[in-house]
Length: 316
Picture 1 (cartoon, one colour):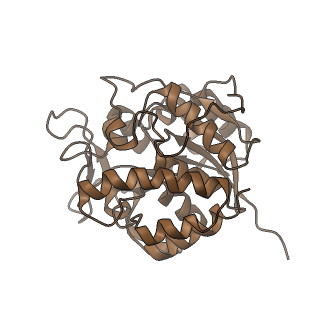
Picture 2 (cartoon, rainbow, N blue to C red):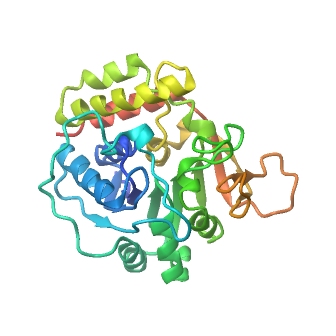
């Protein structure tokens, strides 16, 4: 039997407890070859998101993963962070420590460009799960990389669910709408995980207990992270547990049958004071604008958490 080729992935991230869950899911999945983590400012400033990414790799027992620091803020406009949801460290919950893993010296957007040009064309998937600044900067530096990308599987935006940082905008897109506009217009295939689907993936007490039963260092840290994170989200949304946004991107890569959606045109609003950062999704096909993204809106949430629990148990 011919062994199936691994999916090569660059995860662009701003950890964040849900980012940590996404990274752990990826590192515990043998189908994926994680070429590197590129880090961007987002949930907290860059010095903290970078440390957090290194910390998650160490907690996962993956000291081999390369981590690259990138953009300190958005392409234009003021920086937006989310300590209100993630805590001052960005990973509140477990004990914070200084990782032993060393940061790579290369600038994250340069690593993205170099990797896409050096690997066989259309064999590398980008998984941005924070603001899209690093990916946009890479596309600005060398627009030809868009034709080398296999696909971009991103967490961001919302339509029926609208926004979580403003009434009309989701955090990752709102944090750098100009970058999002560049990415959505680059021509590469895009799979979009908006709030419409991530709000259906809830960290209930029973699901957190399943993760706790694993008992390895990664799961123990993740349970503490998600317990902290769920407390904020449960109060905000009135549910047992909060949305676990970012790992949906990785889960789709591993098992797309867990999800449903349809191809739509997605445009990014960058001018309006009221709706800046909103993702205008032509769900009902009322325009003639070209379809540029597969927009996901349904998920088998039990299947998702079974996958997450299984793969976190693979970590040592």
